[in-house]
Image (cartoon, rainbow, N blue to C red; front, side, top):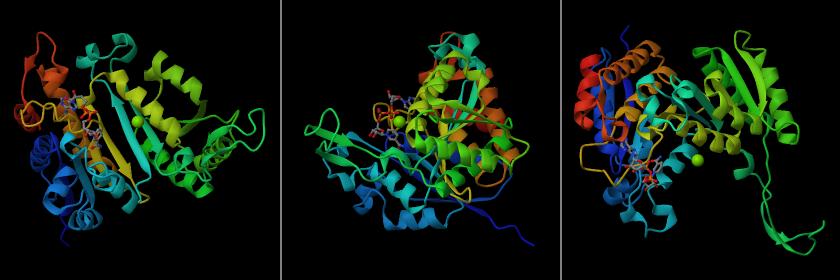
Length: 360
Ligand code: NAI
Ligand code: MG
């Protein structure tokens, strides 16, 4: 019996993408595992080399790989291209083609970086929560939608725009399973966020969450209305562990949660399909303002690699090792410019990568 090498699609993209993905590759290579890494162009780099942000070869690689580690895409120089050729289409195309419907966005604030948050250190220091956001349904995609002359009501005859919030039972069920499985790997608590006091979609959502919870007796499920969740995120975020919610509520809450930490260069993310195959990328963009300078923070990308090991490759132990190594370099006082504070040691992208490898 020979263990098959794990194949990872490495898609660096644009801006700081290649710089930070290089460091993640070095960290993965420092583990005692065999990874087959295959690199391909995506985003503006895909357009420049092959005339399309998601070249055929890149999509084929993404489909056959066991997991995808993605840098970032986008650059001002592609702003004049027609929409279908813009770099951002690459990530949308990958989500659609690989049926990635679950977005996992952790918000972690290492005690050493508590000063970066706008909230008081005692409220956020040590924060470690995870938002599981449904990505493919809800009011962003529900039909019918459009503009018309209002057919009735107090504004009859006036111009109106309308969207439809929709969720089908299987759609809720599959995100519920991902959320419960995720909660099981963490603190065994899951908070489902909805607006069940007002919305029909939310009532179905809540019903299905309760139903699915019977398959996960070791995870404690509770429910929160979205307005209250917004309040609790700011009041006492550390009381939350895993949150599962729909596309729109998740869009808003995950940005708020990310900003609680104040350090965009630190946050990884995952987009998963039904079988936990996934695309892993930093929460930030391609940072063209600092690209090529060797000063970008590679930790969000390195932590994305750790998430990949945990959620797609069943290597939780190795994921823990990487996360511990990151904590160690922060405890040792190493900082890239985005998280620099007086009294710490300012380092560049490569030195930060070196330090993580050494800590491993
Ligand atoms: P951004 O996240 O790229 O940058 C925002 C600010 O944070 C900049 O000042 C940047 O220098 C800084 N920053 C970001 N990541 C950093 C890191 N690792 N280390 C140090 N500093 C970092 O967002 P922005 O400026 O709105 O967008 C720039 C480009 O990225 C655009 O083309 C946008 O479309 C694209 N983008 C791509 C995403 C993706 O690939 N999934 C997500 C968000 C934006
Ligand atoms: Mg958003």
